[in-house]
Amino acid sequence: MALPNHNRKVVLARRPDGMPVEDDFRLINDPVPEPGPGELLVRAHYLSADPFQRMRLGAGSRYGKTLDIGDVIKGRLVGEVVRSNNADYQVGDFVEGMLGWQTYAISDGSTARAEYAPGITKVDPKIAPISAYLGILGFPGVTAYFALLEVCDPQAGETVVVTGAGGAVGSLAGQLAKIRGCRVVGIAGSDEKLNHIVDELGFDAGINYRTTPDMLAALRRDCPKGIDVHFDNVGGDIAHTIVHHLARNARVVLVGNISQNNLPEKPFRPDVTGLLMTARAMTKGFIVYDWEDRADEARSAIAGWLAEGKIRYRETISEGIDSAPAAFISMLQGGNIGKQLIRLDDL
Picture 1 (tube, helix red, strand yellow):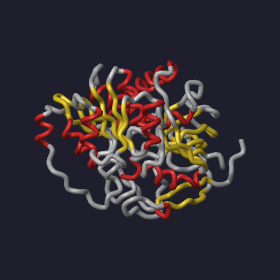
Picture 2 (picture 1 turned 45 degrees about the vertical axis):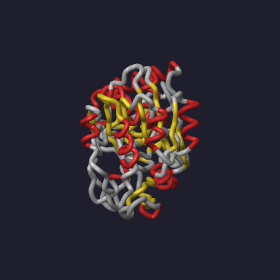
Picture 3 (picture 1 turned 60 degrees about the vertical axis):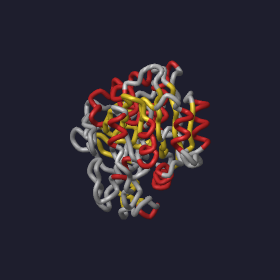
């Protein structure tokens, strides 16, 4: 297979001040790398845009190493092996890994996945389209599976509230709660997203936080028995309000804080410790890498539910690596439904 003479990369041009803008990124061309002993070369088909990437663009991060100016944007890709010096991978295999926003990437062929490790996982296009391995069968799916089912362990008849419900993680978490027999209320930022989660995914109710004047009143209306599980993707004011309506022995899992990632200063909020104590609530932070050794378990279960038609998913796809910064910014502003992807059809 003849390869092009350049590798297109998105790099960090400057650190964002608040919400990123496209000038914070730069597209460059480098030679296509040659794999060394034990390595393989992957041709990217899809890039992933994820909230965690925003935290790593700043000078400091509470979630992994930050990037230096000029570094390739760290993100996941799924693609095809086009050169291999590793007996475990053949030309034509499809793999997924944290290989960066670039059209061609080198992997060492390992399975190390934490932080920026270049390890990869083989994906099976017979089970689902390869793009699904960046979403429902990828780390978003693994996150939803373990954070909801194991950390929170929802029981039939309980009420589960999912914030960021229109995204890749939240939309699956709500569906898993429905499989468990729960009442599920999703919070999202557009009526289109609410129609998606209620009409297509089977959530019991949805709340548009942008147009709801009294969030606590809406929660009391849609969760009359209180909230047993809060699956928190966004943090901020919504999370603070939900604490006021927790049921006794509620479980809160902190998966993300996308509402806070682009704020130049963190706002002051009253202490809610007393409310958590009164509700006897369990609050636990969640980082998906802690569950990486069981990721195949989650993928297998989710693939089974997909095959049975018990869960569904949506993807928002932009075209070409040039569109990656705009797609990323749109995702941070809530412009996606389901997983935000960049399809590379311009190699």
